[in-house]
Image: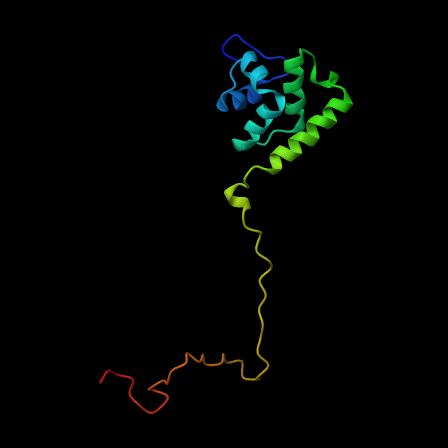
Length: 133
């Protein structure tokens, strides 16, 4: 992942993601582990597929990612789901989407909006001029 160092199964985009999360060498990847490396990438805001998780495991084991046994893939997916669920939601995902906006109409016949009642007497409505004394 340094210039001249290429991890098996890891393309340029994935290598860039890993570098941005502090994983720059095969040794870094082995020390961190496939699951933690995948979670780091997710935490950094990237959107890797599960193929990255398999590719990282394959890179550590020295095999093609498609050679990872199904049982091990299932373990990785389950563990990744648990770890990713612990991550904070992105800022734009914290609030649920607003529901549809609806307009209601009064059936009083004239279509006018009712006067709001602010809890105090309106001097103009009471015959005053509304000015300051």
